Image 1 (cartoon, rainbow, N blue to C red):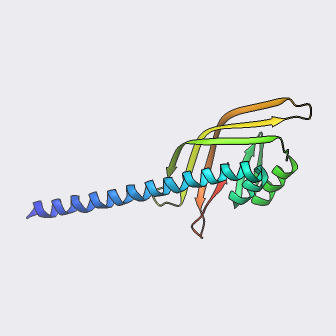
Image 2 (image 1 turned 180 degrees about the vertical axis):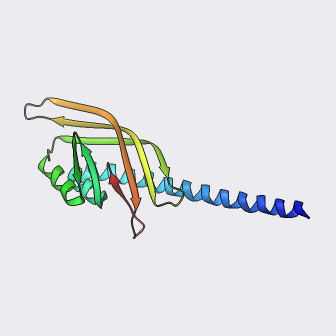
Length: 145
């Protein structure tokens, strides 16, 4: 009598595990799509506009030694440093999503290039890390970059 109960339990756990894995893969795909859209918007509309669009209201960015807190402050920080000869590109190499599907993080390589008034090109390469949070409307916004 115990065998059918144990077998049934394993089948239920297996189905639940498969469903959870499929959900996580779907959420990871959503995050990769958001990252790509974010990068595309940086290229087409500029860094300040893209960071404003993809930031959660309570987002925080770390730039140098400073934490810039809040969407409005992030927008101001980027607009104050706007340079039409600046580019930023990145590629996420890793994405992970919480089991509940409400938080995620990515990391990967970025390249930041600026051309100064004399035409000198300064390029900085590094590793980025972004934390994403699902918003009440279902969209993903970054809460830390």
